[in-house]
Image 1 (tube, rainbow, N blue to C red):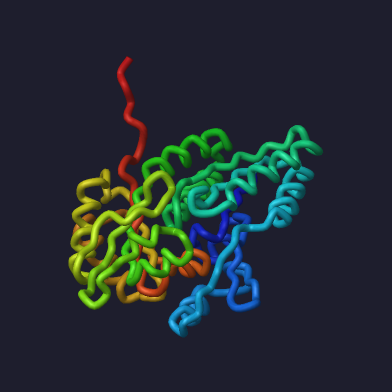
Image 2: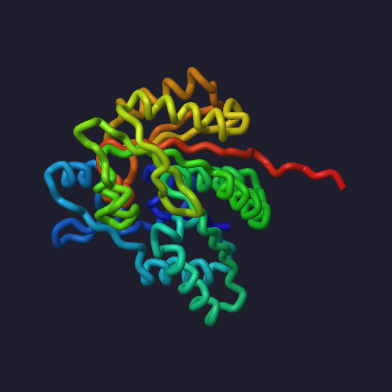
Length: 289
């Protein structure tokens, strides 16, 4: 079985190589140049360009990319699983579904499961890591799909950004939501609802945002001490390390990992972004018959 993941899951290049996961890069455009996320551009360059006043643009993975990968998989006779970036934030998932159906015309027995994660950044990344782990211990595709769909449904995303204007420019939030009192040090707090990024609160200063994230984790999380909690940042590792310390002091999770937000999502969220990801339910509730 082969696992596919797109670059919007914000896992580092080393993960794909180490776990034999096939990377599908989304694209970043700066001036007249097109780059492949992770493969031909690093996030640091995108943040540098933004700080210098440029506005990188992004686009979904191309149909040609999917066709090449899916035909190769079909010819090998292997099964496949693709955990996709939220269809509410990118057309990549829908393009993959279209190309899968096209490949099935020539290879009727082609078996590729495509999951619309409705997640972003490390919310999706945690799902990909779990799928790779399950594959490594020999779980069949059907069981992996069941677990990943459940965890995708229960993945919490809490984000704060320096400036919602970055996201408004790319259409990721409405322009009315981007009216932020920058001079008052107002920080927005966002979550993912039905695959979309939605502002939920505005707080003054990072300390209050971090405290509120901890409060929401206490309200929403289940058995956080048994979870891997992921933290992503927009080229601000000190902010992420401060959040990590607070999370570990409060919840003592099994593991806490930090990754930089990749080029594609970072082009919309901008420098200074912070995200925290965890589950609000670890496993299905068993109902008595």
